[in-house]
Image (tube, rainbow, N blue to C red; front, side, top):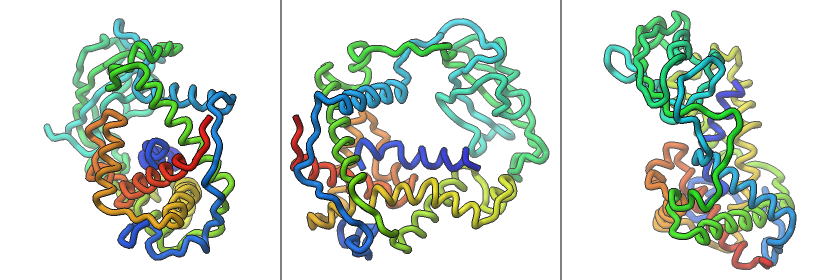
Length: 335
């Protein structure tokens, strides 16, 4: 179950650090946040860009950017062997129709791990990098999905590359243009901003205290996470509980502990800053913030509509995060 929970958390938190209330807002619209948060002083915070802490975070963000964009030398020749980790695209079809959850791009699969149904990994052994193969397979009778139990399917798989035993990452000068930046200086400035903003917000969150959680918002987020997981795995609550040998209380408590509460620990502080500044979130501000985020990440798929697939509240949360960061940064001392 932890594997499923971790995936959902990744989906919802992937953009929070790069972007992270208003009378009509979704989160905390009826809560007096002063009762729930002892907000630390968020003005006049110092970040020293010559400090060890800053330099380490700069390198961490740089590395994360390289990993997220696969900016390392890959094995683009040879054939797949047992034990290799391969980057693949695949489409699974039943009766010539793609089924839910059977399609992915850029998926890293260790051959021999037993992660996929019988025959999938074995069918890739000996396939040349760059080639596409059709795998005629059958799901187990007790797979746990009524549509796929015992079903004959065809997976069309393309082997993009083989992961090297040790990743050798590229230098920024070799890839900044691929990420949409005109100059190396522009890209380095972007990484610097990320490091500074993260250090600023981390200080405020660490020094603030969340004393309690608004019940209505906690239940709403729990429902959002539940719906996301069910949609991701194309299943029902009952099927999920049976597969993982859990009770509904166990499931809810796991989601609360690993997902909902960590998000609320951060977001309550960010919303408290917005409330104290008497700033409101409007549809126009959300659209503007998400457009900036898309431009910053050079990713046109980042839209309000697409982000709402991760939860109705999600575009708002990113906008509030951006607004709070801007307030803190405007009043910070950056050396």
